[in-house]
Image (cartoon, rainbow, N blue to C red; front, side, top):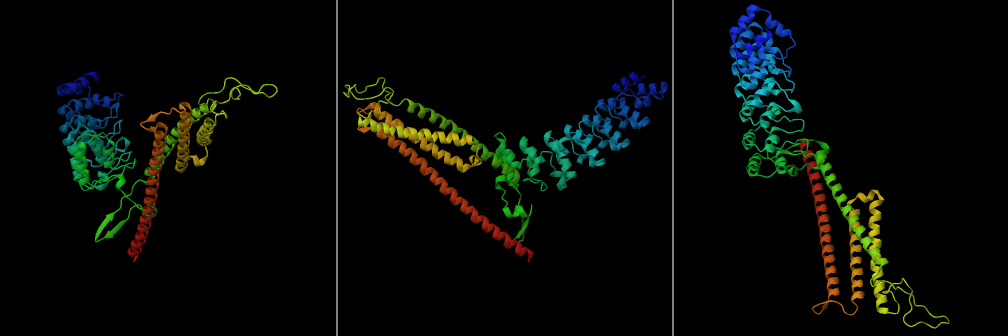
Amino acid sequence: MERRIYEAAVEGNIISLLNLLQEDALILDRITVSCYGETPLHIACMLGHAEFVQEILGRKPELAGKLDSRKSSPLHLAASKGYLDIVKKLVSVNPEMCLACDRDGKNPVHIAVIKGHVSVLKELVKLRPDAARTSMERGETTLHACVRFDQLEAMKFLMEQMSDHEFVNSKDDDGNTILHLAVADKQVEVIQFLTTNNAIEVNALNKGGFTALDILKQSRRDLKDYEIVELLRRDGAISVEDIVVSTHELGSKQTRTLTSHGKNQINMLRPQGNRTEKSVEKKDDWLKEMNNALMVVASLIATVTFQAGLNPPGGVWQDSKRVQDGGAPTSGPYHEAGESIMADTSLLYYSNLFNLFFTSNTIGFVASLCIILLLVSGLPFCKRKLFTWILMVILWVAISALTLAYLFSLIFITGQNEPVIGDVSAIVVVLFGWMGVMGILLLSHTIRLVKKIIVYFIKLTKARRDTNGSNADEQCHSV
C-alpha cells in the first residue's frame, strides 16, 4: 500500500490516491508515524502536482510540517522549484513552516532567494517577513544571498519591503556588507543599484579593516574597475587611507559630530588596531629581510678578506735565506719561508703597499665580523630600525675597505706597468669612481634623513594645532 501511494504521488494520480484511501483509510496516518523521511507530499510538491497536494492537505494537513532526511519541508521543495500555487496551499495550512530551517540552515525564503523565484519570495515575505531577516550560516542574510547568487530582482524587492538601516547594512561573520560582496564579485548592476540607495553605508569597514573601495584595489584588474570606482566615488566612497581620525578623538569618543555652518560632519573611525598590527608586521618583515641581507654580505666579505689575509698578493717565499755561520750573509735579500713577498722590507715601495693592503683588508675583515656577531647576538636593540641603519653603515665601511685592498693588490701585481685608460691610470679611475658612488649614497641618505625630520616636525606641529582646536571646540560646545 505504501509503495502504491508513493507511485501515485510520482504520477500525481488523484484517482489512485482515492482508491488507496478506500482500501485503507489510515494509510496517510501510517505514513505520518512511519520512519520514512520523505512523504508523498514531499514528492508531489517537488514534481508540481498541485491537485494531488491539495487532496493530501485536505485530508492530512499535518503532513505539511513533516521533514525529510535533509530536514526539508514540502514548502522548501515547492519554493525551490518555484511552484507558487503549491506554496500558497502549503502556507495556508501551516504558515510557520516559512521559518523552518533545513540541515544547511536555510528556510524557504532563503531557498526562494537563491533560486530567484521572486513571486514565491513575495508570497512568503508577505506572510512571514521575519523569515527574510533570519540569518543563514556564517551570518549571511537574504541580501547576502542575493549578491552571492546574482539575484538582483530579489534584492530590489527585499530592500523595498525592508529598507531599514540595520537590515540593509547587516554584516556576515567576516564583517562584509552586501556592498563588499558586490564589489568583490564586480557586479556592476548591483553596485549601481546599491549606490543609489541612501540607506547603504558605502564606507563600512569589515573585520579586515577595509572599505568596499579597498576591496576593489586588492582584486585583479579588469575593464569593470573604472566604472565601479566612478559609482563608488560618486556616492562618497573612500579608502581606509583617506579616513583620518585624531588621537584625541580616538581616546575620548568613537564617533563625534561637529557643527559647522549649520551642517553636521561625522568623522569616520579607521581600524587603528588592524592598521597598527599591519604596520608593525610590515616593519618586522623589512627588518628581517635587511638583517638577512646584511648577514649574507658580511659573511661573504669575511670569507674574502680571510682568504686574502692568509694568501696575500704575490704569494709567500718558498725558501729561507739566512746569514751564514760567522755572520757572512748569503747572496740576495734575507727572508724566511712562508713570509709574504709583498712585505719584503728590502723593497720599501712594496713594503708600504703591503702595509696599506694589510690595514684595509683587516678593517674589512673586522667590520664584517662585527656585523655577524651583532646580528647573531639576539640583543633586544637588534630589532630596531636605527640599529639596522648602523649595521648598514658598518657594511659600507667593510665594502670600502675591501675595495681599497683590491686596489693596493692591483698596484703590487701590475708593478710599474699599470693599466691605463687613455692617459689616466685605471686604478685612479676606479678609486674616484668608487668615491663618487659612496658620495652619492651618503648624500641620498642624508637628504632622506633631513626630509624625515622635517615631516616629523610638521606632523608634530599639526597634531598640537588639532589638539588645541579640538579643545577649543569642546569648550565652545559645552558653553
